[in-house]
Image (cartoon, rainbow, N blue to C red):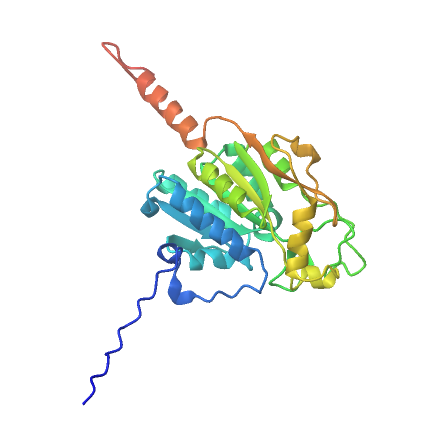
Length: 294
């Protein structure tokens, strides 16, 4: 009788990102050719490069397409209500200063509904990282006009074109006091990962804006083609200009997009300033041989 070979079990190689993603929740919900998945890949690479222990990193997001990011990353993560990701992150940082707190959410969440929180967190120089997915529209909730929608662009609430001047996110952050400000598109994966790594290693309020294609809502309403067409547009129309004046970084509808690292500076964080004041206060209160000073 002829012996038959026993089938050997096939070993399945672990995905390079498996240690950083909640694989039980994959596949994700994002549309085909959406840039959010690419941004998450860049973030995972940045987490590998940084020397910060992962148990000391937490991610906060709000509502919308980008708000799902926190649920896919295998870190301590939190969903907040729409527009409240930054104050939630501020509370985490103040409660546990050892944490590296990352806000990873969308333009509507961060600079639209949460715009006031964004301004004051940058002004205070809270030691948090803000990664802002900018797809120019409220994509998940129906395609409404956003605070970042370029002039003349079509949305469900501006069917004849947008006539409100959009926010220049890097300039908003820089003018309010952010210590690190950069912008890349979802096409610039390696540069984006490097920029995220720098932001994670920076002390103070750091912002990385990620210009991201929304092929389902934004591109369809504006007849811009597929997600691949948008990526080709970013390839042909992105101009790398490190150190550019942030006042000149407005994004116009289907025009050149200036990308790069614009701000990298030092200034005391909110906690640094508070702790310095507290130390001086305690020093003044207890004076040798003189008793407490009134």
